[in-house]
Amino acid sequence: MKTGNVHLAVLTDGDRTVVEATLHTYLNLSVTAAGSSSREPGDKPDPQTGEALAVARALRRIAAKLERQARGKMKHQESVKAHREEIAKVMTGMSIWDALRSKE
Image (cartoon, rainbow, N blue to C red):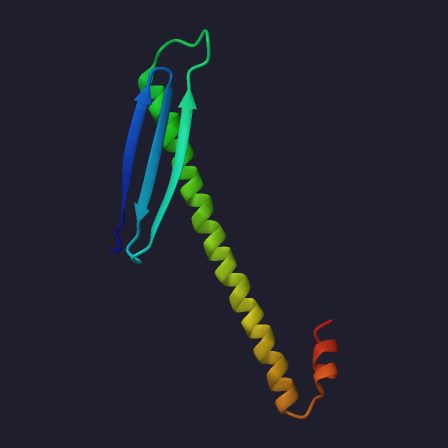
């Protein structure tokens, strides 16, 4: 089983809560993001709800960062694969122009 952990730093000041969340993965990767919440006039004071919203927002941002990083790696790998295919075609006697046209 692979494990990781999340460290949360929570700061509440009156009607506003800010959370900094850091995910430490088993891949030796750390991702940090912040989330916040604030009580609007007329809302009942409920610190637990404010903290929960701020934590959820920080974790959602961490998830988005991880997904962007993973998608970036996938696009890079696809690009490398396409480049290698073009090189292979040229090495087998196809002109570079024909190799590029065959992608279309």
